[in-house]
Length: 359
Image 1: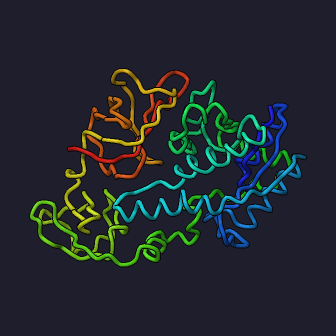
Image 2: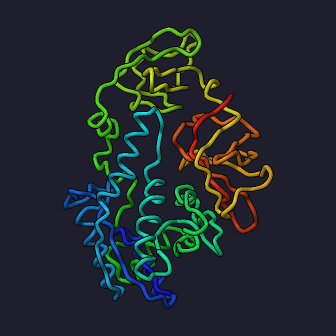
C-alpha cells in the first residue's frame, strides 16, 4: 500500500514509519506544522510542533530513506482545536484537545488530503491496536491512547494504521536506538502542545478575559468566594477554589457544578460528585452503526482515568450511559468512551461528548 506517515518528531511516530517501511509499504513522511509561530526549541517534555521537532522528523525520514514533507495545518488547527478548546472552557466545559486534534486534524484534514493524493492509509505512532477496523487498547496500558482515538468513525479507522500499539514503550525506544534514530531517547510530550508554558489558566485568561462570578456552597447556597471566570474550574477540582477552608463538617470541598451563563461555580462534598447516569452527544459508533439494544460495557470518562461497568444505549444522535456503580468527577466536554472487554483486549465500541449527568 501507499501510506502517509505522520511524523511528529518523536520516537513513536519514527518507529511507526520504520515498521511501515519494513512491512513493504510505499511510505512518505509528513510533519504537520500546527503553529503559526513555532518556537525554535521544545521546553523539555512540554509542547511540540517546534522547528526542532520538524528537524527531528526530517532526520528520521532521512535515516529511513523515505520522502519527507512539511504540511501547514496551522489555520485549521487554530480553528478546530485551539478555538474549540477556549470556547469549551468559556462554556464551563472541560475539553480534551488531543482528542479533538485526532478527530479534526490527523484523521480528517490530513487523511482527506492523503486520500486525495492517492494514499491508502495514514500511519501514526499512537499506542492502540487496530485490526479489520476494530480498535483496541494498546499492549502497554500506561501508554494506551485508544481513549483519544475513540472519536474516529468506521471509515477513518479503515484507513488508519497504528504499528506500535502491540509493543511496550521501552522496547520502542530500544528499537529506535537499534535503527540509528536520534530520537530514541527524546522525552515524551505530556502537556497540551499549544501551551508549552504549562499554564493553562493564563492561556485561557488571556483569551477569555475576566468574567467574575460566585463560588457557592451546594447545600446552604451561601456565597463563599468570587472568581475571575468559570474557565478556572473543572468538575471534581479540589485545589485553587479560593475559599477559606473545608466545609462545616471539616471535609474538603470539590467543584460539583459550573453554570457558565450565571458565572456560578458550586462546591460540595465528594459524595455530591457521584453520578449514576451520563448523557453524551455526538455519538460515534466504531462499527459504523448504533446498536439496536442496550450494550453491557465499561466506560472511561478521562484520558488517564479508570473504567466503570455500565449499560449504554443509543438515543437519537447521542447516547445514555447507566452506570453499575457511581463515578465521580465526570465533567461536561470530556469524552465518554465505551469498551467491551474480551480475550483479545478491551475493544472500543463507541464514544460521545459528555453533555449532562444525573445523580
